[in-house]
Length: 165
Image (cartoon, one colour):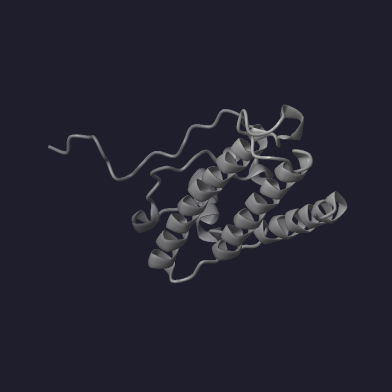
């Protein structure tokens, strides 16, 4: 049987590796980080469950010799949750790859710049004035906040909902 100290060291290494992978910009590495964190959690729950024992079936062994069935249920639940998160991340990776042909997340600098120009009234080109979904500049960029806490959002130029006749 493996010593609990070795398993706890393994949990530490797995958690460290998982957190490192999650902090990367590549979605594939984020997926691998989630998988490693899920496995680290499973090992931690098994180690915390105590020593291994007989199968937890009533009548086969005395209660003192049985292993805890709750630990097994928690690990199975954690496996299912990890599977769900993995499938969601795989869908995100597929969508990102389909749209951009890369899986690295990049900061959308142009979007922030457009929001600043709209808020200041500097933007005049109607081609770039798609403000659907834009929030207030104070919500997205704290360095541009000039003390106005209640700004009105920029109006849409497209005229959606207006009668043009």
